[in-house]
Length: 168
Image (tube, rainbow, N blue to C red; front, side):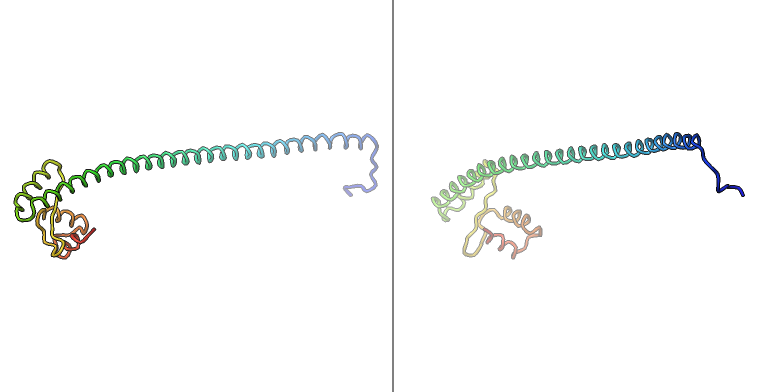
């Protein structure tokens, strides 16, 4: 028999056993806890870095969005201001044209055409006159073709011309 069942231990053997095992166990446990602590701290640091990166990205996107909205609002304001000025200018020219046409009536339409040509050269605005009843174009047919092309993106078509004239 290799192992004796009746082996007796003395106090020195027990003392050696208890003096070696706790030191080895404590060292092993300490190393294990150090490794676990290192990984926990590393994971926590990585999470904090990721959170800071996310916060920076979100703040950057928010700032960018606010800047874009401010830019859009400024552009809208400037465009509206310019359109209001242009609208007032067009109304002024329209009223002048209507007054001139009414003063000269359609009997002297060649004078009206001459006035409109001068006005177009001076203001760089194309004018068109047509009768409301039968939609007959009296002046500015080229302007109507241009408007029709913008609206329908097609060649000159009688039906589209009538629709363009009826368009408010």
